[in-house]
Amino acid sequence: MKLRQMAAIATVGATLIAAERSTDINYAQEGKRWWSHVEVLAKDEMKGRNVGSPGFRAAAKYVAAEFEKAGLAPGASKSSYTQKVPFLERTIDESKSSLTLTRDGKAELLQLGEDANIGIRSAPAASVEAEMVFVGYGTKVPENNYDDFKGVDLKGKIAVFISGQPEGIPGPLASHYQSASERARFLAEAGAIGSATIANPRNSDIPWSRATLARLMPSMSIDEPGTGTDRLKVSLTINAAHADKFFAGSGHSIDELFALANQRQALPHFPLQGKLTVKAAYTQRKIEGENTIGIRYGTDPALRNEFIVISAHLDHLGVNDKISGDQIYNGAMDNASGVASLIEAARLIKEANLPLKRSIAFIALTGEEKGLLGSSWYAQHPVFGQEKKGRVVADLNMDMYLPLFPLKALLILGVDESTLGDLARKSAQDAGIEVWPDPAPERNTFIRSDQYSFIRNGIPALAFKFGYRKGTPEEKLVQAWLRDRYHSPADDLTQPVEKEAAAQYNRVLSSIITAAANAPETPKWKDASFFQRFAK
Image (cartoon, rainbow, N blue to C red):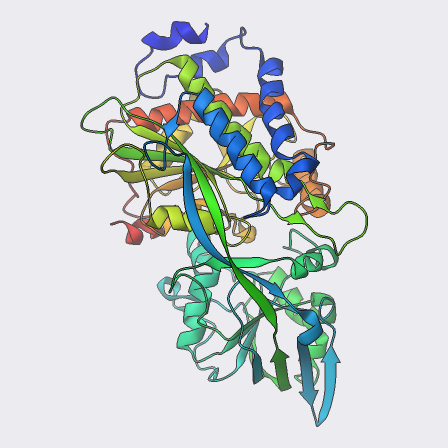
């Protein structure tokens, strides 16, 4: 069945599914077209698409042009695809910064980049001297009566904790309460003035040796009062390999604590010996980012002001001139792949020529790598093109969905939380694609990309990945990709990718979009969902 023959299919969920089952679809050709967008966005000339850079602006201009080709109207105003987002950019000056651990009258100068790093997403205090307390997972979950801070004297101290979560706490709760903003809120309420995270190597996507290379690159926050996580004076990350420097004299070792954490058992709480002195120097400047928005307006007079957002972040990490060899973080899978699917979904929906009741806003977001900043700005400052009013009722987000193997199943984060998830599950299954549960919930993926900005504003949202099961060759491919290519210059155009599987995914995505746009009822959180509390 050709796409033009599908115009008669009007029932919810049918849409492009017939095309997906058709043997007439040339997935090789569609995969090449999808890849052609990735090639443009992730080529070396884009210089890693860092926020505010000429490379990012060139990428955004390309996306706007492709949106126009796909028949999308300008989404920021009647004439512009661009929503401006104000940022404060900070860069650490390590020549004037230091970490000193003093114990028993002896001061040890720690090595920045090797022992620990100073975070600058929020502006740190110029100087802090404080005692430290180990607080387990550094988590508080009121619904489960779990509180790592209860009975612990944190007033004026730095809270040290291991990334991870204890047994018995549902994934959505753990994900929410381990977000940077929630953790900072609870720590500040407990009287802490700083935090220090020890990433568990077992659950870390990036080894310290590679992650620490990014510490000298710029960090950002939204240039608007009250939007950051600046409740604390200092935020640190500690290298697990050197963490015992902090635990000396406490009666505990990092190996002991990791052994408990790897079994998700309860962790002890105890004071650490000595004091930590943190001196932080940085430069700061104002810059401007941009969300690129294109809209396909709905046809139903009663529903056209309800907007389904389809999102993918356009930014990546830029260029790191402090490393040897290849210095460009091309970001082919993270996330030129998602933006390419954004463009292709818009094209497929245009070619299908199906009436959509609700409006669809396709958004290439800025600032995801800096802390979900572009999506946070849009969720709080939505624009609707030529519409005088509107509201966002759902978000479907793509970030690094990893078409590394044939598409047999989708992992849909949030699928059981809302009626939007029910629509997505049915559309996928009707296309012959299974929906599998998250095989690695400990990674807290649901709060780590742009869908979470919409969720925090009460909007049902989903995120998509290629599905795999534990112990399979597909899992090994994903783990190897995370270890070797994630946030690395190796995420480039030379890596092996299943282009036909990406093309198949684009059609499934288009079916889900169409189902959400034409659903009789507005998507909503289920009564039992934790995220129901954010509904407005």
